[in-house]
Length: 449
View (cartoon, rainbow, N blue to C red):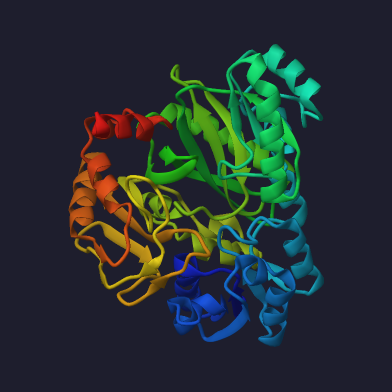
């Protein structure tokens, strides 16, 4: 087992990794920007190192600073959490060169899964259904027009190196494509430093389904069931749950087996998430893989009883998957609401000073957060304040518990997404499990109509 781990992240995920390390008897090192000097992850780690000014490009994304902090504190490994450097193959390579274990996939796997078109090819070769699309990058506008004509409109342009909705444009007609191509290419360059785009058939009202996976260093991979992440705004998830109401035992077993086969063929290790879109007919298609832990991992932990962060750490030491997870049994239902610091009507970020912060409790309720009364939500980072998770023996019980918890969650001093989530959780379509990625658009219309 590792002796000491540096956590190259901040906020609730940094605290979550500290929790796991404490249970495993591993010392921890926090890194922080000047804006996070008084943050809880700094307080609860065994050691802490300031790595730069508030802007993430000068601190949490500054590879030399992170590695310097790791070297001066003499750590064995680095856990990147999610976001920031978690899928940065260059960072993983620097860790290897510095004789520090990167708790995640190898640099080669990070590059493979980070290049969306290559990931699509790998999955298709293993028999995983893939959304119809271009065979690799579309080099220019002419190539994009030719591919769109072959696939048929509507289509969607996507940044090959991207995610989170950036570098994406839906095109419904040929005359719209030139402008959309130029805009998406420029946005991809600005966001990821790589302008490459690929093209897919656009599925109008899909559900977003993803499978959680774990892989060891001995060639074994397993899936831990699926999550439903269809409630989104601007491609950012707002509410997630496990299992999905659209996935039955037969589909879970068949698709899960294909995912496992595909990832064993490429030698995948650590935690990861394989993401799919399901169309209105129930057909399901691979879209991308996130080679890291996900924000919504707690819902899988609740229905499986598997601590995914501890599993990541143990797998990184070379332990076998069977010893880490053992026999997997899915039980009950879990729902997660991402409590964000933003206006619930406009989604405009709401940074500032929290004056009151009261978290709910009771049976089946879990809150992952680094916030507290008198904390400051800085304007430099993601707006996530807390993750509220409700678990029940049935989906109905999880919904009732989530409703209670949202009513008892008190945050003052900043605006949050709680008022919107209170309404969503009582919406008849949500309760019935009638979900797709445009749910929030229709819900917003119903609220204003």
